[in-house]
Length: 121
Image (cartoon, rainbow, N blue to C red; front, top):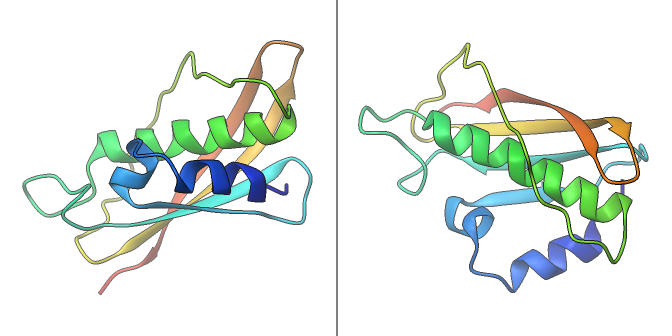
């Protein structure tokens, strides 16, 4: 999914994705996209691991970027996000979120987002 237009919009905004250090990535498949986020002072919890809330924010923001790309000129807002945390990522590591559009309706999209650990120092 080509998300270059959405990335340009986000670069000029002081929103949550920028605050937490999210980097969105286009993919060659039409219904997928990716994002990376380093675990640092912006998104860690007190014990030095990625905050679960930051993980959910990454998933919700990735789905929103994908929905905006899938429906140019429309506004995308999340209505539900849930997650299971099965592996911790320590400070200094990086996580990658992989998003796949499961359902594209007229007014509702359903995304499956999987966040994987990609690097730990």
